[in-house]
Image (tube, rainbow, N blue to C red; front, side, top):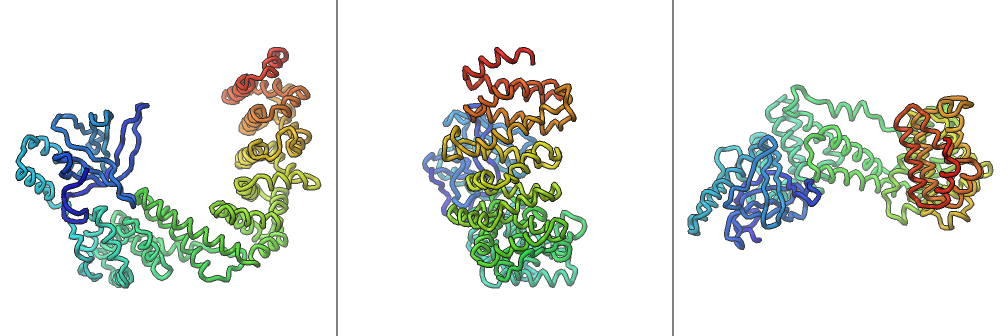
Length: 571
């Protein structure tokens, strides 16, 4: 349907922020998106209707609904939701408003349309539309989108703040362009410094609204300009004067004094250093200063800016021929007792994690170079002697590697002369601290490495799987066998969380390793041993053992059916 009120940027209907929901066939509400709602005259329908325009960049309509003359509309949810059954689409629609005042206004317009619905005179219809364009009261004032923003002067701050906070989605592009004009943002920041020197709290409150609203415009070009090195600390400073707080917040003091940038390997490129600092400040604004104010779209844009900065930093460091060799040289030179050791490992973890966002060809080249430089040897060294917090970073590096290509780690574990890394991983799974997070991460890592879908050769002929079943699967089984709450001749009580991971792993083996796991069942009586976990007093562990039995039955393999009937009656 066409909107019959001129161009979107002309003076016209008043818009209010709201979410659109639609009842699906399962009986639950589906979120169709967030946008801005108004009452408009629909030319094709020759009637007035509700129109919701998406606040995303495409500005597509989320809802176009002709207002019915029948009494189908209801208000719920503490008077901020309007819902109805729409006969045109044969389902229920709900509009959830951000503010009750918006819900009140749209509800009044719906009722006014219904009262005057029988008026067929075009002149009367035009008069009705004029009424819609002038909402009662002075809470919402139309902004002349054809005019530029007032000059950045102290006397105009209140008017600038009002124009920014009341701009409709159609006016955002024009307002953003006005703010991007050369000198406008610097002039506002000059005024901020003057007002702060004069302790002009009223003007500082207006500046807070201006800066916050400018960020909420969600214009990537404007955000990049505001977050430049020469502007960002003043932007943060303006956001310290939130009128909702009785005292000034100390964000700049924290960023300039409390935050310490640790450069474990010298970065000589000043542009890259600026990107690193900018990224941290973007994340600080997003997660600390404005978390309760940002809408989903602006939060996503800020997250994207931080991500793009991180990708640019990783790409630049990858292209530096000296940087990565120097990093591994320092890792080799320092010991876990050195103060710099933890920082080096933390940097390697973050670097590997950010590398996951590179393009596939770049990611492959980077991880191949890391492996060549000795990535897995470094992880082996970390797991030997480091505290749990550092070991967790090391396993996270392995997870990042396997998400790119598990074959490289699988090949290293298979051909490492003493299989030390494989042994350390299994040790941390079976003997590690149950509250460190390490066993959970290693269990998922083992699943990835033993997943047939990630292997080039068949599971029956794979040397890595053969190594695991020959040397390590029995070590995992010992967690159950040596538990004195399960077996009378046990030596200790295993943590319940680790037992749960072990049972889950054996479920995985049954589901994915047909030949190998059947041989292990016959050789070690695996099923009976796992089912004895029901003897633990934790109810959820008993359920885990039952789930393992169901897994054996669910694959509908005659081998398991006959084995269970013949051998498991006395468990």
